[in-house]
Image (tube, rainbow, N blue to C red; front, side, top):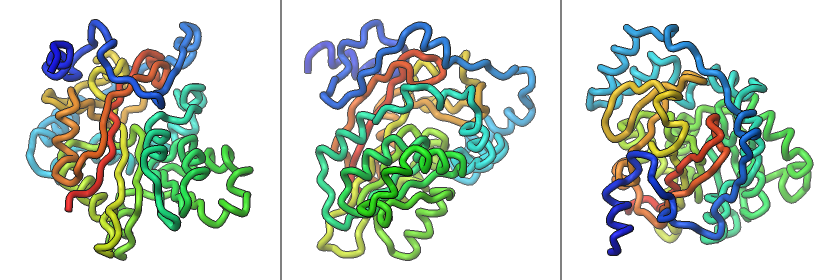
Length: 327
């Protein structure tokens, strides 16, 4: 192992690097150019920290230090919603013209879905599902390439309407109309229902959508549920693929002037000062793998950089991963 790699492994993602030259690049990595003016246009004002209920935050911090899933769920409920289950919060996000969803960089196809579908050929009749479709950019890309059913799920009705408006001309094509389905749902409840009915999926894709849950909820509830749904009923069929990206603590939007830290540790649980939603910012790749490895075996992972993606207009760092359920 060369010295540069040893240094990278020791440092992890715990702070802004002096140089990004050692980050791996890939032909499908997102190439985004952001001007200073463009960056300023997508900055949004922060909420006044003085309006935050200190007593409630103290209780949230106490609960997050507990080592059981229900305490973590209660902490998220006290913050006003369980991450992506917080329907009203997401309606506000998607209906706000000042929010960074209007950022032009959000209208570009993410490198992860390009890489995923170029390296993994799904069979005829496969079922692909994107959780947290947002604006539908990646979903429409997948619909052109998946030879089977394509399901897009979001907890926000406004988000689904945006997807319909974006790709109505495509979804009206006879070849896609019957196999592309858009669903407004709590995706965890939707997965549980599918699991109970014994209906498996061939691929689950999530871009920057999992960090709205606490580490314990991810490790002990969400990843095991996904693994079950991606495990086919027939032993002759290959298990499906989970692909996701998660922001890391090196991202510009993870800075303390954008996030109110709740506790320390390797996951940096925080409340976003813009949209008031819970997030985690894992310090390094190992921290994320500790959550997913009990349920999945890695096929590929890497770090990706994107400039202009979020409210800061600066560089965000994503850990991108795909793997299959452990047998």
